[in-house]
Amino acid sequence: MFRKTSLALAATLIMAGAAWADPIEGNWKTQSGETATIGGGGSFSITLKTGKYAGKTIGSLKAAGDNKYAGNITDPANDKTYSGKATLTGTTLKMSGCVLGGLICKSQTWHKL
Image (cartoon, rainbow, N blue to C red; front, side, top):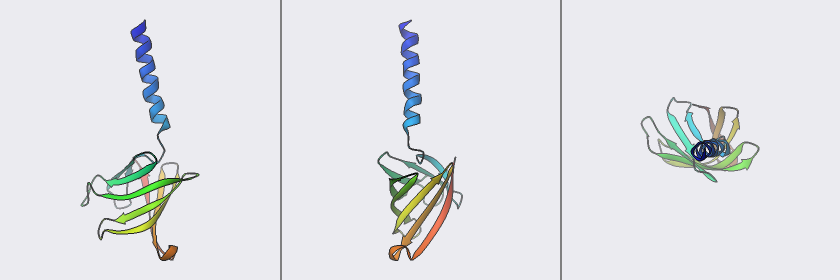
């Protein structure tokens, strides 16, 4: 009886931990087809997992409320860092990086795997 209760409690805790994860955390397919991982908790690190720049960390975001995130995004091709933001809608993440106070921006749409 004790063993069944312990297993049920452990399963509940594991499932609850997954439910507490922020929806931005996980694996994402980038617009160019690579896979990126976002994780970390309070500050979310973005790391490329596949492609030419696999293993490279390309950003750091913090929750800004209502499925919005803000921080820095780095272009892996030239190592330039931009003011970044992201908006999560379901399983779609719209990312953008801007310079000159938002005068010039580039954006991408990623999809959760």
